[in-house]
Length: 343
Image 1 (spheres, rainbow, N blue to C red):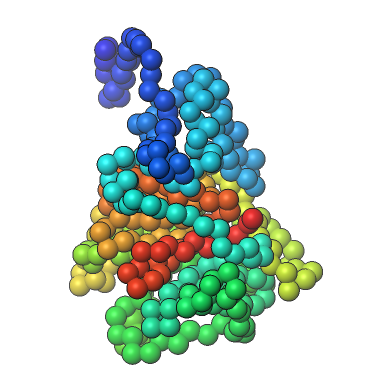
Image 2: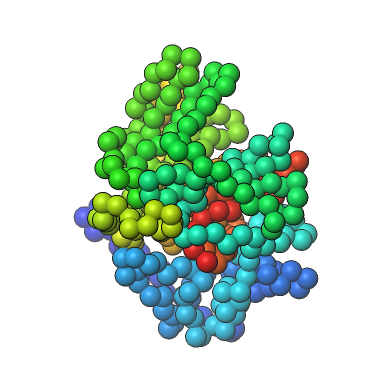
């Protein structure tokens, strides 16, 4: 190893002699779980030649679309439901028999903001269509394949009953695809205090703040930045409001697609010590939640990434559609419902 110091910059040149066979990039983690594939050292060293198409602005090829002709094991990635990047913690997290089922096919509109109500055992979510916001409800007391109902709320109304704790939320331009009105607020993170009605701006350095979640200890706030997406100018009104249309964005791969952590200070009134913890390996971090054990989950394109509190990728859940958000359901909150758009 030869190291050079030039004008305050550290340059390193490493030459490693490779001897013998190299382990496959991907392998079935457990013979009884063919849909769970372990990735060797995060696929950080891929045998040449390899190829993945670059973004054309409207589509973004993901990790599983990488072509690695020199390692046939990588083909396992494309058929897996779960990718395990940290074998020890990832397999412990998934348990002995993880399953992924495609339940509903909905229209091509964005589906967001899932809320599970334990007392009803129902999952509520929003369908973001131009001009109005249909609400969908999944009744989990019956076979879900036959219990997708909808009810309209026009305009959308939110009722807070007996809420005394502050509400933290983000605002950005991404939701303007379902509105005829241009965004009126700065893309930023806000805090609403129900007892006084006051709204405070608490963070405005992120380009497109999106998902937001609090750590179990209540001392860290995680916020995703979807700044890599830029809105495409569209017609003022859709020709047919009754049909959902996908959001129209340009994807800039060198833009912000990052999750940040902040310390919650000042009696939970402001954020400090901003630090980046995760760069999405493809697409953008969207919906964001924190599990009881502190793991951070984020919707990222065709799936959900599971991270430890430091931002280390442990597991990816792979889907055949774009996931925008998700929610835990069931008596023990061990079933994860993913929602989004696409086939």
